[in-house]
Length: 139
Image 1 (cartoon, one colour):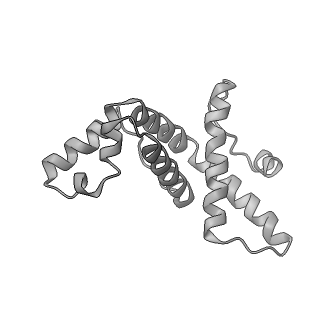
Image 2: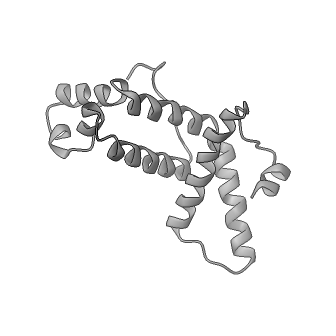
């Protein structure tokens, strides 16, 4: 994918898990978009590399779902440090209350905080905070 169209690197594991969940749900819901649906079907992806790349590029650049996935991925990538900090802060609160947080719970927290990035954009806020005091207040 051309670099300007891509989302960049997501290095935070919880954010990558959250983005994978968002992407999967979006692709499955895109029942009227053949390009997006092609990415859900194993037969489309179990093919030679040229056809595979064509399907992936078509899926992400050939329809509204793909465009929204890329837009959301860019938000997740830009806010990954804040999201990871929020998840860690929230997890620490659970542990302080002697509650164990499973990995699925951590992923769900990341999904929750990642979703906030889209909400904040609507409010003209382009980045989640990364200072520890604000992060702890939000958590």
